[in-house]
Image (tube, rainbow, N blue to C red; front, side, top):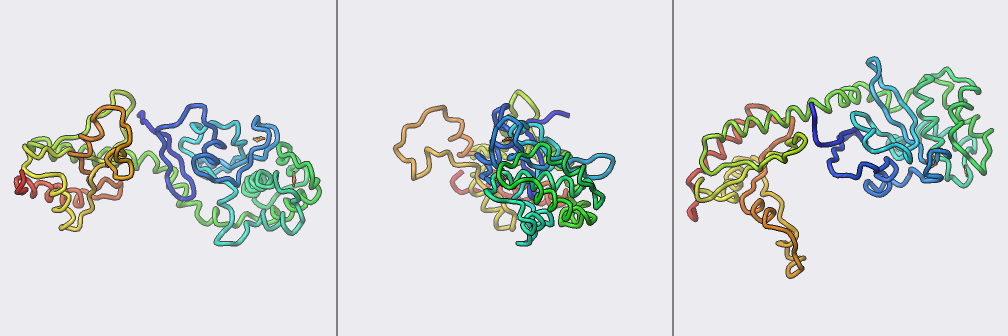
Amino acid sequence: MTRDCLQFLRSGRVVRLNEFLPRTTVLDWLRESERSIGTKEGCAEGDCGACATVVVREHGGRLVYEPVNSCITLLGQLDGAELITVEDLADDGELHPVQAAMARQHGSQCGFCTPGIVMSLFAHYHACNGATTREAINNVLAGNLCRCTGYRPIVDAALEACAEAADDRFIRSATARLQALRSLDDKLARRRAINDRYRHAFADTPGIGFLPDAPYGEPNHWLTVIAVDQAEFGATPSSVSAGLEAADIEARRSWKPMHLQPLFAGAPVCGGTVAERTFATGLCLPSGSGLTDADQDRVIEHVLAQQGTSSDS
Ligand code: FES
Ligand code: FES
């Protein structure tokens, strides 16, 4: 199956991206798009480890935590995985055991290397599960350069934190996160099925159409948008929306183009009329993957109930 977006888990939510430059690195995306600036850029060529993050994937039915240098990891390499950064480690204000040990052992001075070192040790904390050695820790830290603290307190912190079996919120949420990783594709399949069902239900209804699919890739149908032709359907998108709202069904008009918004009134406009036409006719229908067939039947029923009801049609 092909699809037209990259998807990965991040802080308990699914991130889907379908517009990014192929050369975008994970570090670029974190710092410039998500604005998560806990992850640092040092050398930007994979040598210093300041940018280390952890990528989690399923292997053999369990979650495996792998430290990666985000400055040389392309965003596309996250597909189907979970991304964890230093911002994610604290649990309700409490430092992660690795962070707490670093603080107790005075493992940080200027702090520039610290997020990367913490992430490398966090991956090891999960990998060794209470059975580490000084030699193993030296290997884990081989890719993290610290120029001012010195490694003795950092290794002591690692020995302290990794002396016990891993017990953090990532262990407690492992089953749910494993399921979330497995369901990344299931959720998309469900959105497509919902779109198919709407198309089938309105196939013979005059004046209800669908936005055309792009001729490349495969749409994820994250949101189903119908185009309501007032003359043929006998109702405006606004009146259909109002009818749905009266039945406690959330539906929204499609996106208002920027040049139609008051703030940009009078600003120069370039391009064609597609956005205006989409706004004039478009209506976003409930499309979440949690929508049941019965919920969807209710939406369809209330859309059809608006047929021919607008006084201005
Ligand atoms: S910034 Fe130095 S390894 Fe990424
Ligand atoms: S604490 Fe300064 S480089 Fe490590």
